[in-house]
Amino acid sequence: MPSDPLLGTDSPSHKGHQTASPSPSGDEVPRISANEVGRILDAIRDLAPAILSRAAEIETERRMPSDLIEKLRLIGVFRMFAPRSRGGLELDLPWGMKVISALARLDGSVGWTAMIASASAIMAPRLPRQTYDLIYEDKADVIIAGVSTPGGTAERVPGGWQVSGRWPFASCCHNADWIMGLCVMSEGGKPLYGPAGDAGPPLVRYVALPASAWQIEDTWHASGLRGSGSHHTALQNVVAPEGNFFDFPDGASCEPGPLYQGWRHLQSVLFGAVCVGIAEGALWDVAELALGGRQQLRAPVPMRDSEMFQGELGRIEADVRAARAAMQIQANSHWRHAVADTLNGQSLYTQGIQTGTWIATICARAAHACFTLAGGAAVYESSPLQRRLRDLQAASQHAMVQQRHYADAGRLLLERVRRTPRSDTQL
Figure 1 (cartoon, rainbow, N blue to C red):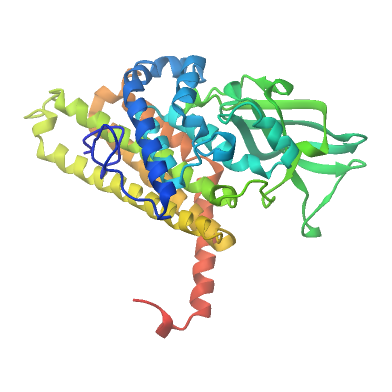
Figure 2: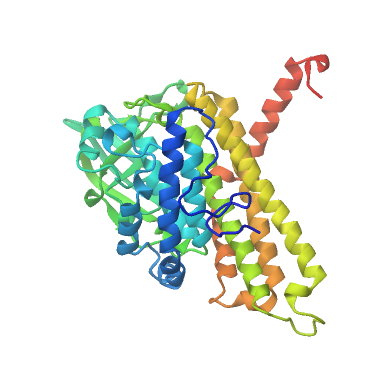
C-alpha cells in the first residue's frame, strides 16, 4: 500500500517535493514541472480533510461546490496545462497527471472535474487566435466544458452560423467559463461535406461560446461520478460568428508547445489518471477498514489478521499497480512523441485508446473486488467503497473506453504481422 493516499503506490511521501523523479523530456522544464506539482500536491494534502468530509454533499448536489472550485483554482489545478505565455504552468503531461490522480484518490468526481477543467486548456488552442486571446485575456485558469457528441447543427446565416442542439455529458458545466459543443455544419438545410467528400461523414466542427449563452438542463441523475455535474447543455437558434468555431478532430493549434499539438491522443491517458486514482483510493479505504479492527460475522480472526483477506488484498493491489504502470508507460511514450512533434497518426491514437480501455476495465474490477472484500460494511451510503465502485463503473461506460475499441488495435496488429517477416520481429 502507498505510504500516502495522495501519492502513487511507488512514490515516497514527502513534504517539499525534493525527491521528484525526472520527466521524459530531459531539460529544465521537468524541474519546473516537478516543483510546481510538489507544491500543488502539498496544497492538496492540506485540503484533503475538507474534500473527504464533503463527499456526501458533492454527491447530493450533483456538482462541485463553488468554494471548492475556487480553492482548486487558487492552488493552480486549473492552470496546470495552460501555456506559460498566458500565466499558466504548462506542465509536462506526466506531471499534471499526478495531480489528477491525487484528487481522484480523495474523490472520483473531484478528480474527474480536475481532469476536464485542466485539460480544456489543451484543446482550446484549436480556436482561432482572436477568440483564444479573448478567452484567456484575463486569467489562465479558464474552465471550459466540452462535449464531443455531435448533438447540434450549425446552419450558415449572414454573420455566422445559427446553432441549435442539445449535448449530453457536459461535465463541470455549472463551473465553466465557456462551453463547447460539436455541431454538424449545414447550409440551406443540408449537411456540408466533410474532408472525405460526399462518400464520408458530414462536416463537424466545435462551437465555443461563453457559458452564459447556454442552457443547462438538470439531467445528471446518475449512478456514479455524481458530483461531476455532467448535465445536458442546449442552444436554441443562437448565432455564433465564424471565429467561435474550430475543426474537429484535426484543427491546427494557435499555440506552440508539445501539449497543444495532439490533444486527441492525450485524452485516453488523462482519463486513465482518474481511473487509477479512484482504484488506489478504494484500496486505501478497504485497508483502513481492516486496520480499524473489523471482524466479519463468524470469521475466526479480524480482517487484518486473515490470510485470506491479506491474499486477496495483495492480488487487488497487483492489478492496480499494473494499471498505474501501464498508464505511466503510455503517458511517457505519448509525451516523448509530443516533445518530438510526432504525436500523430491513427496507430498512436489507437494504442492510447487500447491502454485506456484496459486501465478502465482493470480499475473497475479492482473497485468491485474491494467492495466485495469489505463485506456488508460496504453497502451503506456512508461507505466510500460503494461510491468508488459506482464512480469507476460510470467512468468505464465512457465512449472513449468501450470494449469495441480493442477491434481497432487488433486490426493494426494483424496489419503489422502481415507486413513484417517473422525474422524481423523481436522475441
